[in-house]
Amino acid sequence: MEKQLFSDVSPEKRANILRDNADNVELHSYFKQFNNDELIDLRKTLSEKLIQISDKEIELNEIKEDFKAVLNPLKKDSKKTLDCLKNKGEIVKENCYIIFDETMENAAYYNQYGRLVDHRKTDENERQKTIKMKFKDGTND
Image (cartoon, rainbow, N blue to C red; front, side, top):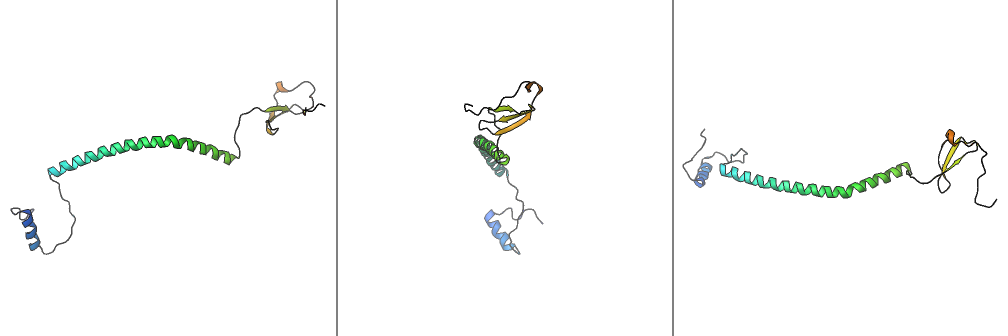
């Protein structure tokens, strides 16, 4: 088998001669090597595409940063809301009123609505050595 057939004939005539002398014609895949001009054109095309890709990736990163700047606060707020729903409440810091029990062994914390929000044992220095007075209810008793 020869590497090149009919190399002395023009490309148009070569195709006709090959077709006339072939036993069969079928569609077949094979590796076709590029010549130097085609390689130069491919390299140029590749470099242009890589530059475009780089520009688009920079643009994408800027868009992602802008998107994250909007999305992250929403995620943070959503997480806080989800935690509140899951725990059925939230931790707050507000003025509470401490009231000691009759034995002076327990301290109860009440919020501004009069609800018991916490309690603890009293410290030694909190225990009163005198008589405990009655609650005042806001009337003139």
